[in-house]
Amino acid sequence: MKKLRIKYNKKFLLKLFGAEAIVLYPYVLFRGSKESVSEQTYLHEYEHVRQVRESGFFSFYVSYIIYNFAGLIRYRNCFDAYYYIPYEEEARLAESDVMTDEIKEALSLC
Ligand SMILES: [Zn+2]
Image 1 (cartoon, rainbow, N blue to C red):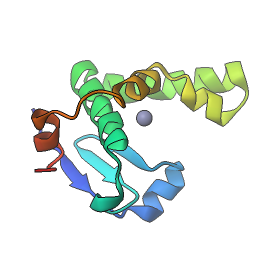
Image 2 (image 1 turned 180 degrees about the vertical axis):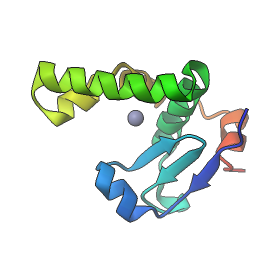
Image 3 (image 1 turned 45 degrees about the vertical axis):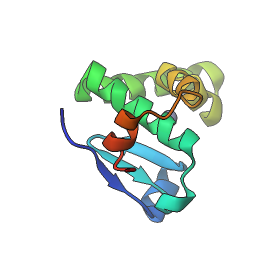
């Protein structure tokens, strides 16, 4: 398993994606500083890491894009298209998980 590369203060890049954070495996990029990122955001992004590792890099990103396009056709708005991507639904559920030592270690939080 690849070691994650955690980067903070990626304001410009994250603004382009309109996001607080993004997983470009093995990189996990955050818009804000380490101190400003919430536990909820860490858990959300770690779920995407788990999804990439489970599905495989290519399969995850290709299906993510396909789900997003299908959502755009279906909902005709960017927010809903993103919101209903199954990977995002799973990641939102993971936001209320318990932060384990394993996750902290993977995200270099300890
Ligand atoms: Zn997400």
